[in-house]
Length: 421
Image (cartoon, rainbow, N blue to C red; front, side):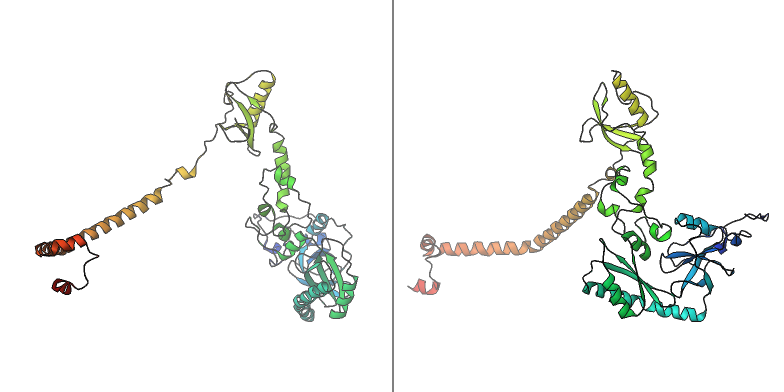
């Protein structure tokens, strides 16, 4: 490595290490401002559509920097890509991608010209229509596969079809039909669900851009054991990512949880005290706390103690001794009191307001009723006096008692005619 001297001023992040941010798997060249850093390696990392990257030799020693659009060697013809990394970091990226140092045998031709960009834009404009037509062709041939994306080469002489299939697919007939329809060289690439999600990109449930679209290239199998050892609820809707597979981030902290879980007492250990028998209920692996209950299945008289305290009591039980309580040994840990957020405010606070409103409504109705009664009181007295006057007139009539004896149903419809009769 060449020797160099730094200036006396304090170094910070170099702006020259930043490049295009509109593509997945973006990288930051933190050695971009190091004198002589670009001459440490002739290898160049070039990115194409979405997450496809490849490594090329800068045999012409072009002054390339991150963000330059270059024409590179391809088979057949040439392809157009964007330089994403140069200098000493490229061999490290190749090692991370599990590629050998001499894997990049293709060359960088030149910086892209205007004619190269015109062909490139014409080829990219055909990608969507090609994908739609190819899906219909695969469906007509009865192939159990999904064509997720199509990428044309920069010169338009070749097209890469990315597909997803659960089983092995014989697509020889499909290649013949696609070559006849689109008049280009056909290349089929099978990808998985995680790779497809990385090519599409998006925001994960954590609020950040998905790992498969930012930095992750090699995908490791994720099992439900990773969720079990971290005490994560086995809810498929929460454990699955946008690829409908288990989230890759479940593997990030498995080793830490495994190491911390080894320090906890076994779950089948029963702690005997003078007051009661305690059974394992739950544990906080990272904090090293264990909660015990006096019932095997319910949270009854729960006590939270440290893992060291639980091991000491288990050792005492094996020696035939029983502490008076789980809190006998001074562990320096205070059991946190459970705070019920619902008790901070009255659960009937809204009902009280409603009752006040109803009481106020009832009082208004009573007042209105009293006003109506006060206004209609005189009318009631006049009506009562008229009824009394009519009753007295009926009694004074000669046929009054006879009418009352026969009742209302024998009363004739015309009183005048009945009197004359």
